[in-house]
Image (cartoon, rainbow, N blue to C red; front, side, top):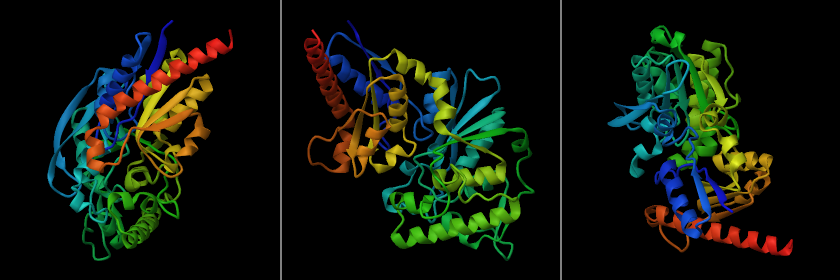
Length: 389
């Protein structure tokens, strides 16, 4: 009797995109037993790889664009035009233009990095005829509240002397006035959906600067400066746009891009899974599987806050199917995923090694661990069958 294994992973940040992760896991699953039938379902969550994955799933196309990178240099980026939509739809992946991978380790400074390139991608999508734009949030290296993105679309951010503020999150501290008179008029006729983690908010103790500033390179002092700058940004937005974005669900996505796009462009902030998963028939695939293996680069206490392993665990539990997680690293609080439908989780790191070494061996270790998991699962099934006669 075949064992149907659904492989539905996220990508490994700055290492492997979801397609490569799925392929590596599938190879290990097939090596474990001839009875294994694998369905590869690499998923998109708005972060790295989302645009290419969405183009592949829908039979669409990837459009390459040269844009301003997060540190101000020109980089190669891209967006997707979907292939099976009722209206021309583009997927703009923020990480493609402002991702952490585009910020050299020695220049990781969210005080200065910008989302301007993401705005240039939006312009390119409009030029390509998009009438709906899905902005995928995740894996960013920025903390500018989406000001750079809006600037590329014609909005000006001015200090009290009427001078344009500097790029980056720290520039928001000098903001006095927002001038939307130059906004590209096509935006008004375009639906913009922000596919984001709705657990992230802009300000407060759990605001985006305090939660994610350190991983983007901010020191403890800089985190507080960024938090204050975003609070001030929210005050100016409320004064000029009439919207309080401090605590709206998803407002903190990608360094505050969610809040900026909602207030300045009228974008809707929607759970990334509600926006993206319907394209993958996730629930239908789960229903057909005997075992689900998902994966994420790092597993910790934040995984339950809108990450793919927790979402797959939740959907697997609803369908009565076991879910296993493979993770590059397992950090503090990772066990919280067990409360979200995950049956077990394993690290693919098998010995002490540097981060660079672990990333270099990611594909190999995913394959080995997947084979181990499948062999263990089959052994458990055999014991269960023996116990029940």
